[in-house]
Length: 417
Image (cartoon, rainbow, N blue to C red; front, top):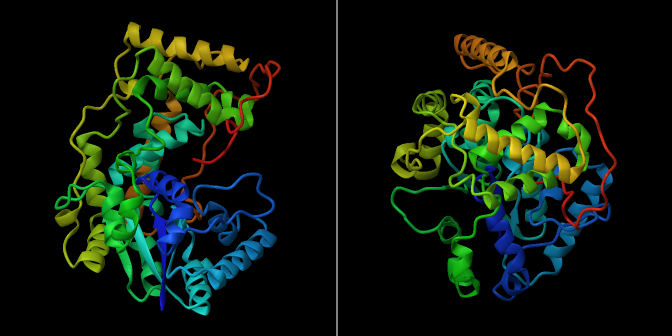
């Protein structure tokens, strides 16, 4: 049978860079016998680098008509293609609830067209994922907590249970589920090259790749000054004022921080203590994933990033120079997008809400441990997200919103990462 390779995630593991390369090479890959199909529903304004539309349709975030349209489109492309290999890639597939049966459904669709499905999963340690997830949420103005409060709330999330996420794909693929660490102790090659080699496509893709492809990095993480400015924008009500322009605003702040020379390094919130805590919390899951994939322990293949000092401004002693830098970015952003912030939120990094959220998360985590790791459906939603809690003190206040200064350049208002 022909092959259907489904890259299921995990998020924040170089997935966008992979999808960028696959999209750019789509016509040339067909000549090499590899189909990376464009699956865009008629309801979508623009195509997506990944197969996010299909993933959202399968897990219920898009209308049923989109799901049927996309499945029919995929089946039609499989019937027509002369390629012996098809590749799908969407990092959110691994996080869909097992009850939806998405792996089985895709396996059946592929089998009906003469393709045998296999999965591939890119992974990194949970502490590193927490750092990446925090910066991603900050970039979309979805997060106002300090990193320690955020990490305490998310440490027990099912999103960090790698073996649980891989299990339904292993079952649907008959055990054919490759796992590739972002950093491999035994293979120094770039992730893209290792991934293609793992699935047996490097020989076909190598002649098409440029030297820039190997080191391509999309969604580069912001630095600590930009992160703190964006965190305060969220706490000041900027997300409500900006709406669909939230990501455009964060890009503006990140670019302004670089232009002013503020952020020489990326944000690092993970302390040695948190790293050890996350490793202990998910050791059993990681061991199960590693044994199923490699027949070896997690540490045999997965290498941690080099230790870096914590540079989270929100928990550091106040520094007049840093405060001035953050204030300058906030002023630039508010002026450029013509918005105002709730009074009192621009200054001050910590809050009683962060401390309360951290205490509550710790209490819940200890309770789960006593109950044998049970995850309450009220503590995390079906996508593994802790519930959002409003910041105290905001009450019914509304931010001052000024008229929009005019249309933004095309693409600045997208809501995906």
